[in-house]
Length: 116
Image (cartoon, rainbow, N blue to C red; front, side, top):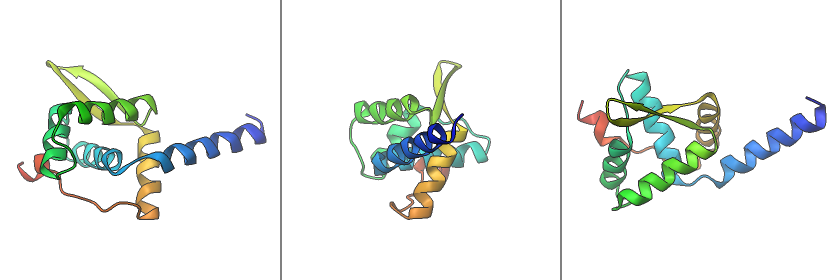
C-alpha cells in the first residue's frame, strides 16, 4: 500500500471506532473476556448481558449492535451447535484497545461471566 492509502485506512479505522457507542464497546469487551475464559459467547448471551446492564430491553437492539460490529469486521459469527457464537477479530481487538485507551466508556460486568 502507498503511504497515502495507509493513512486513509488509519483515518477510516479511527472514524469507525469514534462512532461506536457504549453497546458496541460492551459487546467487544464481553466477547474478548469470554474468549479469554475459553467460553462460547452468543447473541442470546449478549442480549442477557445488555438487559442486565440496563442498556436495552429488546433482542432486536442486541442483534442490530452485533450486526454493526460484524459489518465493521470487528467480530466474527460462527454457527456452532445451533448457536451463533461471537469471536473477536484482530480489528475488534484494536478497536477495543483504542476505546479503552481513550476511556470513552466504563466497563460493566457480564452477567454471563459472573454466572460461570
